Image: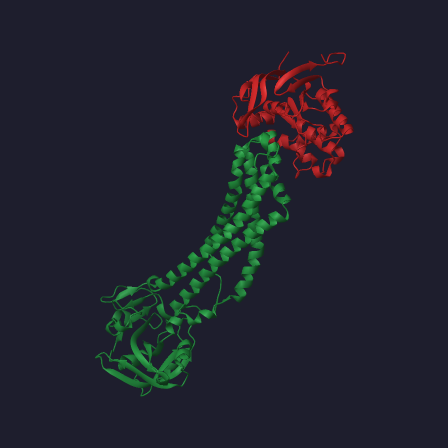
Amino acid sequence: METLVHLYKITKVYRVGGKDFTALQSINLTIEPKSFMSFVGPSGSGKTTLLNLIGGLDTPTTGDIKFHGSSLGNMTSDERALYRRENIGFVFQSYNLLPVYNVYDNILLPLLLANGKNSNDHDRVMSIVEQVGLLNQVKKKPSELSGGQCQRVAIARALVKEPRLVLADEPTANLDKENSYQILELMLDLNKNFNAAFVFSTHDEKVTKFIRREVGLEDGYVKWDKIRNDAGEFE
Amino acid sequence: MILEIAWKNFYRQGVRGLLNACVTAFAMIALIFMLSLLNGFQAQATRNMVATDMAGGQYRAPNFDILTPTDWEDRTFSVPNLLHSLSASDKAEVLVQQGLLFPNRRIYPVQLRGIETRQSLLDLPLSKLKVYGSHPPDVIPVIVGTRMAKKAHLTKGTTLVLKWRDKRNVVDARNVLVADVVSFVNPRVDEGVVWIRLDHLRAMTTRPGEVSWVAVKKFVGTVDGVKFHTLDILIADLMALLEQDRRNSRILWVILMFLAGTSVLNTQILNIFKRQKEIGTLMALGMKANQVVRIFVMEGSLSAFGAVILGLVFGVPFIRWFQNIGLDVSYLSDSTIPVSERIFLDMHFWEVASSIIMVVLIMVFVAWWPVRKITRLDPTLALRGRAIT
């Protein structure tokens, strides 16, 4: 099977208060295109660190990450920025929308960053806005939206440039149950419609119902890696 | 795109951004005002000195120094033909000698300044001397300025004793009549000066054809035994005085710019601190660190640009209003600074342009200074709002 991301013996050590803290220990993992998977585990287990490393926001202490065969370890910070711009969509727990921009402009921003202004930008933005159900909100600022709507905007922003990988860090943590389900269903739909893999970090059990693969982390180690079978059970 | 983001962020700052721009604008107006006022001061002082004393330069007796009265008797020369033949509008012959006035039983040392009555080069209100003949009468007519009259308690029509020394070093004395008390725009030709007809002074001091200097409209060539002093040399002491004022105004300007710069710096630091998540998000979306820096620098630049606009909005009406009323400097009338009652701004294009450019550059610099560390920012910490603490 084709591999989108390959992690080789990833270790991440932080220096905290003069002492070394190992966030990740010898992680070996592969992520396939169009995956819909999550890293689960308690706080401090290394989920967010793993997402940050895959997204090129951080660099491993040892080991290497390959994205479609290209090593992130050899990239400069500017090259990693380009890698994120072209390949990665981020969805954050607290949405991280730009407060001065309205919905439309927030979603447009990654396109402008990637290609500058293009004639089909408007159509692309409006298409994704329609898919996330925000057609009536395009002129609103983030401060005028609910949490669920903000997360939809964040998802639309992550997907508008059609990345190959969407990294979502606790995307349902700030949402109520109903909104969480709506967001997860939306992401599942988008995973089918777009050629993008979705990787979550979560300790929200609601997420588990939707994902097709679950990687359990504890104290920086991979404790389990389960894939849902055709019967819908993890094995 | 960067400009667009920067503009929206600048706009979002609202009153805070407006106040920053206002402080910078006022600093800019103050700087231009101070420099232009000094220019106006300098221009008027120079104009007054040229009009009443220096003209376009002076041919002087070698080593003549107006500040050394004891030498005046020895530093005279006979006017050479080259200068004597100039028209009345092109030269003014002047003889300066020491004298002692005795107003109200006091002794008052004075400078006797004899000047041709037919000259029209210098703008001096001495027409009352023209009515007298070339031979000194028994009571010699003199004219004094208002400052001199005030100090020596003289009024028009006052008669008092004048004592002087002639060329043979013989002391002589005669009554003089204050024929007029006039207002001079230049205190240097007023304070301690007694104006007298040149032919009278020459006769009194037995110095026919002699002068201390010949003021001329322009340099007319080298004259043997006489030294030409350019206007620049003659007004050098005044320029030195004004240069000191310029230095003082620069200190004031540095203080103003420091305050304006601190305000912008403070806003930028607060901005970066408050907007760490935004910085992290932009980096996560694929913006390079230097692009993020450019957004913040652009915001600072917009603030500076806003300050220029506000500077024009506030500055132009203010300067127009000021040019109508001028600055009252009558308090200087007791000094030796050659300015009249009010001075006005004298604005030089390059001075205004360079002041604006300097303010903008300083504002852009203080906008960049705190944000340069963004290039070293860890995006994961920025996303959590912990990169800068």
